[in-house]
Image 1 (tube, helix red, strand yellow):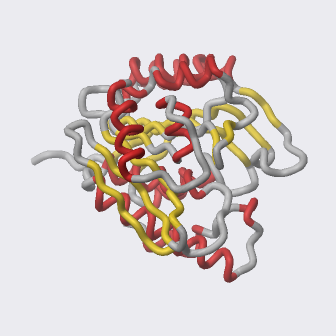
Image 2 (cartoon, one colour; image 1 turned 90 degrees about the vertical axis):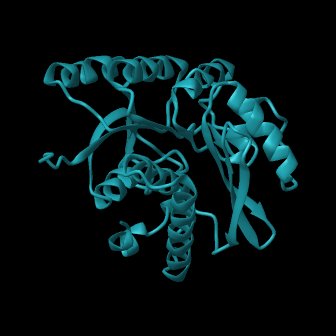
Length: 276
């Protein structure tokens, strides 16, 4: 009889103590989906950078020493999920981590947290963007928003909604860079919001649902965490995207109902028990 074993995911992201993003979102969500979480922090922040003041401790120089202890413990991972990376040096460290720990069946989810609303984050420069592309051939699924997809693919960003033809072109460029399954997230089209799925065989599909309310910080982390857990659990990508989108939408609706400030993220805790 095969011994039952709990699945395990390495989470490579920053720790922001307040603001509902990054590891503070991923750990509870993925744990609720019955997967053990093992966190490798890229930085420690008092709160995310959307607030006026922030304490920031860069972990770049500590990351290799940190995960080398995991190697000595002989840890194995069913999934590796990468989020915010603060520099080109960190991308290279993550690339080494994946090469060290990934086995043929390991699922690799890359959420290239590089920008939003047409603008890269302050820490994102050309070298970081170029290095981030090196993670694409190592990935099983990538979950960029449209700004990040533009930065990675070299397609110019524009304010009007992207057509499905434009998204297909963008996805084709990302596939050419080595990405396998792609989910371009948070595509607002009037009263609807969509997620665009693309696979290397040329299959593309837009999944839409009604906009639930105000845009909140950290929803990309909520979405990608569900995608990561489902991928490890063997859930088909389209099913997972629908689940993640519906969960985020309900969390936004409840957050607006409870008057939670947008920069404080979404109150996913209220519905965490619904995740499976």
